Image 1: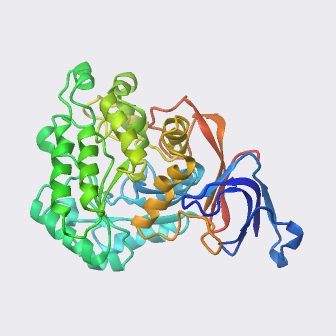
Image 2: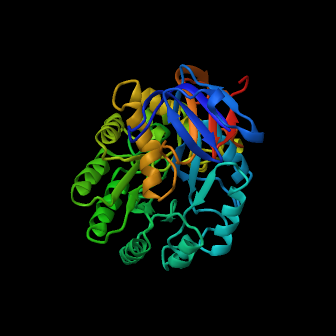
Image 3: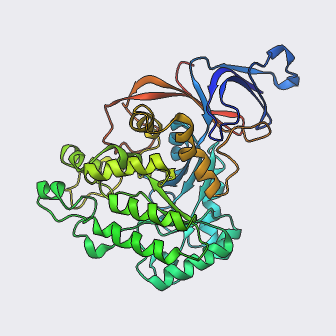
Length: 430
């Protein structure tokens, strides 16, 4: 049993917020109250562990619905066990993996192997399956069979779906199955070299980049195709002000439209690519300050209803290749909470409760995960952190370290991550 005492409870539903105690037993929250006397707790043989949380926040474990753990096929970058550890250190208790592995998750055998390995991590590991066989964009997978085998949703993240007929069929099937579709919105017709914005950054490196129309064109198409289908669709890692506005208008008529923003897109611009080189190369690329501001406003007004890291590990050797040859992507699980506090909460754009709506409650609801909230009888998935205490980004639990935030001092120190009532991460020295 665990008794968390004296922390400020952050409740996205705002039903039990304020300073209080939380008693955990058998993987569930047994009691939430202003004070719980340890003498009143019947512990039995298991005993009682007390966590003193005065001066810290106690919130639902975060839910990241856009993550790459690289297993199977690319475990030199990351695997499910190291990925689970880095997620726990960052305060995440539930992860939804993308399906662009090798082999891809277009079959039940691969899907079940990933879920089985995930059970060894101590946190909740879920995975999407592919929309199309082999991620070729030509033929739908057995979406019903994959859903029955445990797929949390469907995506061809990394390989945008260009065939409108395939997209329509996928939307119809996803709606029938009650599973979300996550779309990587980049039309290659507008891209010369991906991972860098066509503008100041591409001019600096004297290479063609990714025009903003690559995203705008696909988002415009997909919000239009989704109308009337009943399919929940997710615009992944939104990066342009125009796409934010397209989503804003679409959501007024269609509540099944969702969007996610990655911390790097509401924190950095193309200037970072000039400063950090390939460590800031990603798909879609970092864009202009006006785009970053639009993403912040979209998070503030709820147009963008989820924050997801797009955690994408790559080796040091891969990132040291010439810019046009290095892979796109950065890791983000261990820095996401801190960046969100710095960029969203501290400036007053979001309250802490609103932040955890976007980082826990809303992604859990969309993917039908029984987590992301705090309530008696509910899951004992929590993070305990100090939002003001600073820490220096000196290394990661991940196998990879491809991050432009290395060396920065950030607010928001995670002290404990608890999943299913068990401590899966504890800050050194606690």
